[in-house]
Length: 125
Image 1 (cartoon, rainbow, N blue to C red):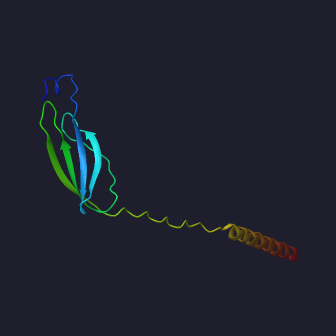
Image 2 (spheres, rainbow, N blue to C red; image 1 turned 45 degrees about the vertical axis):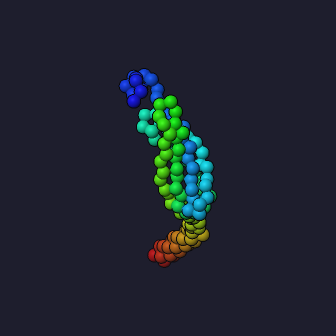
């Protein structure tokens, strides 16, 4: 732990690490470099493999004045990319305009017939 690193005001910087992947077919892929978190030693690196399979990821630190070199490894399994779902067809609501117009006309005709019958009944009296 550096003096004044965690509890003081000094910023602790990480160290550069190199990431290499070894595919299940034996291919060696240079993922690139990144810098570790100075306080925890963690790191991250975005990478998109070109093929499915199991990849062994090797992280190498070449060393500096404070620490000697070191390596660590882990493995990841890369499956197929998810398929893009097809959009569901859009359903449209039925158009009830003509039904409403027809019902309106039927009501008007029924009222007209009722009024005509009422007038005829009242005239006969």
